[in-house]
Length: 310
Image (spheres, rainbow, N blue to C red):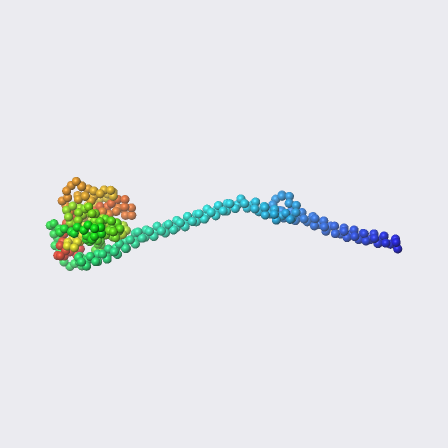
């Protein structure tokens, strides 16, 4: 019995050894798998000598940051540049719209407003002085000295109504004292230069009006021909001038307003009408000057000039 016990012990020892041996290969396989896992996990990072999978997350994060840092500023710069270009583009579009609206307002809306106001003013005047377009009687043309016009002297005071048949049967505008833009010219009226003579007087009756915007009364000034009539109506008379010549001068050439245009040293003997307006349209670097001389006048109590009677 004593001899069998050692044999049993030896068998138990062998079984234990065999069990350990059987487990040893499985443990060694895990040991070999760990480097393989580490190698697979570090394949995108290059030869970094990573030894364990526990180091992979930190290493991968570091590598990712290292790879993206140079590109991030480029993206930010591109984004900022694109944003700036976008803002500039929007500003240019907005500016274009504003300029377009201003042009529409300046060219068209001011014309509509001025012509509407002129029509209302002239209608009110016609109620007092009469409308020559509805006259049935032609007054007698007279060449003697015409009656003196009222010497109004306050800016915006009404002096008369001007007619130029060449521009159409409905063409007519008020003439007011002064050349203030806001109070006179921008309302569509002709403005009378204060230091010049009054309508019908010997000397130079000088007036001005817009060629574009605010009624654009003198838009068609190049169409005027020598001999065309220009009529100024007052309460008591019609003054009929005939177009002579014209010239284009710089704005500084104020000699056109002299009693004898461009000859301030001479004494006047004629009854002259001078109309100044801008030239060329929408540039206004010069002034278009139209000269006319009094041909005859008609007593308003007797009728209207033949040039205005339909």
